[in-house]
Each structure stands twice: as C-alpha cells, then as structure tokens.
Image 1 (tube, rainbow, N blue to C red):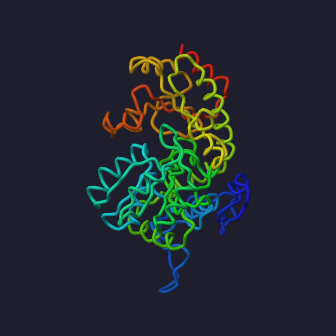
Image 2: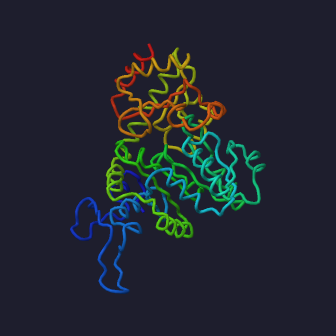
Image 3: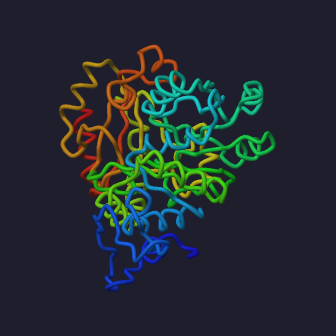
Length: 381
C-alpha cells in the first residue's frame, strides 16, 4: 500500500490495463463476458457482479481509505441502504443527531416502515447518553462527521472504541472529508460510506456512492449483497469517479484553503449571525478537528442575520456562488438547507437540530479566493 495519498491516487489500486497497457483504465461497457467453457469462468462473467472499470475504481477507493474491499454503488443513499441490509430485521441503530436529510428520510420513512428498525439520534460525543440508549438489539452506530450542514464533529476514535466494547458495528459517512482529510478505518470504524457524487468525482457530473471496509467478513457479506441487490455504479460513472480521484488531493487542498479564508472573513462580518466551520478555534469541536482531520474541510455554513426575505436577496446577488443541490464540485455552490438538503424534514425537525430559514451551506470551490471573497462581500452589502 502506498503511504502518501497524492501518490496513491495516481498509482494505487489495480488500475492496470492488462490487454493494451493503456495509461488509464478503459470504459468496459459490456454487460457480460464470454467464457472459455463450462467450469472455466474468466475473471469477469457479468457486470452486475464485477466489471473491469468498476474494479479499477473500487480497488483504488479501498486503498486510499485503508480498506480491503470497496463496492461502488449507484448513489450515496444506495450505499447507506446497503449498510442497513447488513443488519437483521428490527435492529436498533444509534445515529449522530443532525444527520443528512436524505439519510434521515431513508431511516425514518423506509428502514422503520419496511424493516422494523429503530433509531435514536444523540450527540455521539456524549458517551453517557450513548450508553443509556443501548438495547439488546443495538447493532450499529451511525457516525456522520462533519455533519451536514452544521459541521459538528464526532470523536471517531473514542466512539468506535466504545462500540467495540459493546460488540456494535460502526459506520462513518466520510463524504465531507474523504480519505484526504480523515481516515475513519484507521480510527477504528468498521465501515465507511461515501457519496462519491461530491468530492470523489469533484466535477458535478456523476451520481454515485461507495461502501468500504477493512474486515474480510464484512467484505464477503457486502459483495453478496451488492450482487444480489444490484444497486451498482455503471462503468461510465466509475470511469468519471476514477478520473476525478486523480486530482482529489489537489482539489481538496485548494478548496479547504479557500474555505478557511472565507470562514475567517465571514466570522467578523456584521451581516452574519453565526459561522460554522471546524477549522476555526471558535468551533466547539476544534480540538477534535485538530486531532483527526488534516483541515477544517471545504464547507462553510453560515446563519445570516434577518429573515427569509433577506436570505433570498443575498442569494439573488451572488455571482460566482451558484445556488444548487449537492456540494464538492470545483465550482462554489450555496445550498439553502431548509428547502434543499433537509427539505424532507418538517420545520420542527429542522429547527430542533438548528437548521433555520437563514442557514446556508457554502461548498467552496477552486476559484481564486479574491473573487470568492469579493462575491460574498458585494452580496452581503
């Protein structure tokens, strides 16, 4: 395994084109593969089971995250659903409060109704509270760190050690950080999920997800489930994500540096009620950030002063920050969490976790920092 991630992104995994020695793995769109004879099955047989392009991508994902296995799924929520299917019916799951709205919807509207699962949402940094929620059927602790959109952190090493003492699986949603910024498997997690639509792809041109583990028994079960359920990434999406991975280190370095500058600028602005950014010393989880992350990340969330009318006026004036769903692309985006990422939650549910009509999530891109700061300044004025 290659030690340094920038080098691993270029040379890691099993990306070799054995047939033609192409410098980049080709897109193999075939649905099936010709076999020599009965009982002489080749390396690939059917693309739902395995595909050369997807395999090159998955092995690289596994290597950079420190895993032994990765499976590329059709979306980030498909990855979440795959993890839930590792659990028996009527399992109890403890989740970090303030999880992504799509995760909350899957938990509350599908997992409960279809599988009889039970959920408790708590601050995973409060082990006393976590311990009070454990039941005989508690099977999983779901960790999102940083959370979306308020960027709360979980002490991953601490909660994973706690879970192991209680024979409970842990899964970390590492979408906002990627392996460039933090390595949950090395901190004790059993599983990682990613929405690869975000920083992995990096160019806002694909939908995808992934599940990664460093435990062979989980790898075997995941491989069976992904083949049986079939929510796999297409060869073309795997190709786009693999191509995006090549520049992950460069993009994350630039985006996180821009984000820190923007967070510092907005923190002292008269029109801003609050800035949420774990790379600022004022953030309540700054010490955790320093311990387990390379940087504070490339997302800055703000709460504007005023009301929804003021928020709309601000959004209408932005020039380089585009109003759009998602995050993690090379372009800077702004997301209105109440109506976008967490639109499936009720107003009461949103406000209980601190998502108000004036909360905006800024996904910082790779543009020149001077232009981004000027854009925010003129829109705020």
